[in-house]
Each structure stands twice: as structure tokens, then as C-alpha cells.
Length: 353
Ligand SMILES: *Cc1c(COP(=O)(O)O)cnc(C)c1O
Image 1 (tube, helix red, strand yellow):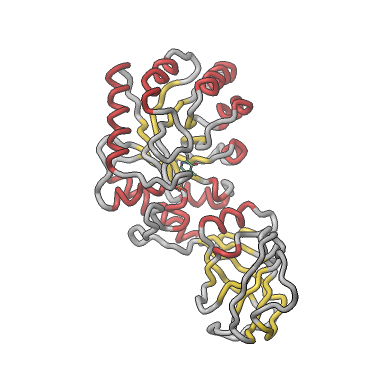
Image 2 (cartoon, rainbow, N blue to C red):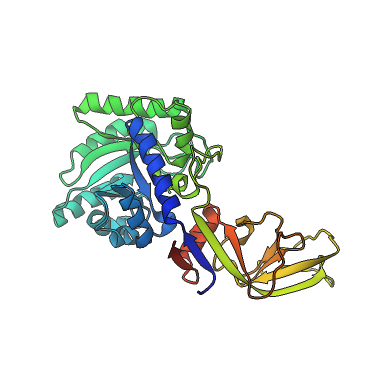
């Protein structure tokens, strides 16, 4: 054993993925499962493939490269860097796009590599991250159709990211209508109408997904087991696929308020303290280099987060359900932010169980 470690429950991961597959299948919606939060870690992606996933998506070409042999389709969900046009075409058969020059570079790359590449035009629908303005889409579609190297696979929109805008039936119906206009105008199938990420799942649950949305890009939904617009659970999905485990290196009864002149802490913030008297303080060998400490949920919710620096996390274990000693292991359920950093940190051992 070596700590910190991140346990990934194979059966729970499978269950979540299969729940979303059957839910979207019933609605006639195709899903690319987004693996960026897992850094496309192969053992986990292989479990997903076993569970029936055929379409994977990631934000980085490196990650897509490492799962080249898994599934039938791989989509790049971060708009491509023009400097990576070749790798985008090499490792992704579809990409989300919002810039005509980049699309032209993808077309040239696809011709040079003799590979097929499908372009999905992102449409700005309120969240204000990536996308063409809606009024530019018809003209852009026409220009893409004139390129010899790429095919126009669809249009899509993104929500819940920069602006926190929640996708509603209204915007998604507009997106579907825009797709219909492009189909009629140019006489093309335009199979993909990509209606967002895990924030769109609540619409499926409430049976409010407009006709004509044919595709979703899902990450947090299967990882954490929730829809991300209202952060409510979906079906009987597990919210604890992942468990982060860390070791106690000091356990002492000390005051809850520091004494001395108070200046900035290790992250240049001036801390404020509430006085709880003397408390049992545990120091864990895990820190901001391993995960995001303040959003980790201890499995025992009587344990209270006190603070963290690069390599130490402090907890108040006074009211914990059991007694601890140095060397004991504490368990946490990470949220998306904590999971992202734990997966990315080389110091955290990953283990399928
Ligand atoms: C990360 C990402 C997704 C997946 O989002 P979740 O909230 O994890 O479902 C979908 N689309 C784009 C463009 C992304 O960057």
C-alpha cells in the first residue's frame, strides 16, 4: 500500500455508465463519454468499454492518443489548437470547432494524412465560452461544406461552464431548429446535434429534452452520479465511485485558534478562525499537490476540514465516529474538482477495486 491513493470502484463505474447508456438510448440520443477528468486513465476507460461505451471524448489529443484502440469514435471536446491540427486529425475522428481558420487547418491536415475528420460547429447560446454567434452559422456551414478534407458532422452548444447558464428546452429547441435549417438549405444529413454536457441530463430525467437533440457529451454525470444544473442525483447512480485515502501523520489535542501575529498562510490568504476550545487535530499526508482539499467530503461527516497547504491537510477529528492513531487511513469522497486534481497528480496512486 502507498498513500495517498484513489480507489475506483469498477462495479459502480459500470453501473453509472450503463444507467446513462440506457437512459439516453431510450431518448434516441448518442453519447460521447468524456474521459478528461480521468486523464483517460486506461484501466478505467477499459471498464467503461466493457460496460458498453463505444464513443469516447477528451479535451486533450495526448489522452485520445492513449486510448486509440478503445471504442469506435473519439471526439476532441476542447476546440483544437491550430498548432495541433495534425494531432487532432490523427487522434480524433470528430472535433468541436469555433474558428474557420482552425477548421481550414484541420481540412489540410486530413488531406495530408488521408483521414476522415468530422467537424461540429459550436453555437454560442448564452454561456459565453466557445461558439460561433448563431447568425454566423449558416455562412460558416457553407464554407465548411466547400472544404475537401473535412465533413460537416453537426452543430452543438455548451452550457454550465463559464457563465453557469443552465440549458433549457428553449435554447435546445433553437439549436435543433438551426440544425433543421442547415439540413434543408444544404441537403445534408447533419447527424449530430450536441445538446450539452451533464447539465442537460435533468431535461432527460424530466422528459423535457426537445425533439432533434441527438447527442450529449457526458463526464461528471457518470463520474459523480449527478446532473450538474441542479446537482441532483439521477436514477440510482452511485455518487461514490471514487474514494480517496490518506494517512494520518500527526494526531494531537491543541487549541483551535493560532496564537501570535496573524499574516498570510501558505497560499497568501489571511485566515480567520472560530474558537472551539481544544480539539483533536489530525494532520494527513495529502495536500494541494494531490487534490483539492477543501471540497473533499470525509466519509465520516463528523470530521471537519480545518485547512490545507501543499502537502498537509488538517482535520478536526474531535467528534469522529471512531478513535484514530498515527498511521490510520482516512477516507474521502472527492467531488469533480478534487477528483480532477487527484487523477492529474502523479503522487496519487490509482487503483481499480
Ligand atoms: C468537459 C466537457 C464536457 C463534459 O462536461 P461534464 O459536465 O463533465 O459532463 C462536455 N463538453 C465540453 C465542450 C467539455 O469541455
